Length: 380
Ligand code: T4K
Image 1 (cartoon, rainbow, N blue to C red):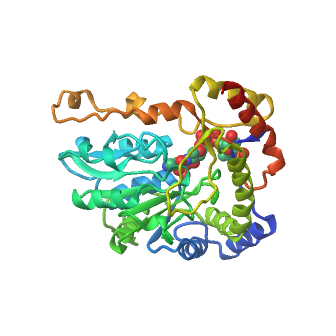
Image 2: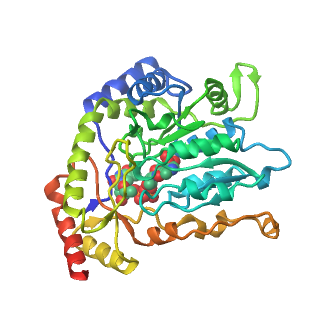
């Protein structure tokens, strides 16, 4: 079966060398030498400062909210609102709810599939604390417009960049926008550390606070300064990250071949995500948008019969999940704004991500391309 993705496995010998160094140094976690090396190398590779490694991409979001102070408002804890996109993986919104905030969904742009900045302003209320947009499928959000909104309304902006590893925008790292950007290094991502993640802060003081938070708030042997949690990356995760980073260029080249083969064959046949001008590609995902949900189901089934496991990333649109909704008491509040979500619901019902990973041969995807094109031609 050709699955939607397959984790990148680096050279075993390289991994063994890093593991040997762990055994020799007898240091397994808590800010070890490999974690420090990976931090330095990622800052250089990505062209960013103030990068903090954490144990996964969901905790990266949670720690970013805490370090920036949006998750801590005594007395108002339950009613803090954060504007975010409904078209994303569940972790973007569930991390907010988990931290006691109310996600307020505003609609996406139906072409770029990212949060539409024109819809954000009308959803801002006195309770709004932050905006959490997502560079979905590695496509850059309209960062200029969103950063400007954050500044004008004194809101923190935290970009969920889980899909945006290595993406540049107008020559600089896309991840340097906002008060913070987060990354996921889950096994299924183009760069991974088995599980893992990172936060890139604009300000050094926020980085320093987050460094404390991921280690229980401890700052010295007998000093616990504030409430914290355990979100540290261990040395085996860092070892995997270092090996995957060693081979990142070949990984990207291999993905690029498949990505461009899909694009060439499918452009004009199905709707593709409109890429943000000025942003680079990282070949993380290849989504296609079919004409209807029934056509999507038919195409998916045909693909599966031929051995291709495409995935409905991201379905359902998150505003439909009642456990992310407002508590009943707040629903009676006249100040509560519930923005209308049209595009995200529609796109979520007919979007499909095609198999894409390093090592997948172009010849192996031709059957999938044929099924999609034939179905389209029959429908036209
Ligand atoms: N924000 C956004 C926007 C995200 O997309 C994500 C994660 C996060 C935040 C949170 O970051 P983390 O806390 O996860 O670091 C996968 C990933 O688990 C998840 O990390 C990712 N987004 C999401 C888009 O995809 P599933 O439920 O689709 O994974 P799963 O287990 O179905 O795997 C997908 C395919 O990969 C399978 O068909 C087979 C293949 N696979 C997977 C694994 C784990 C393998 O061949 N080997 C493996 O070891 O969520």
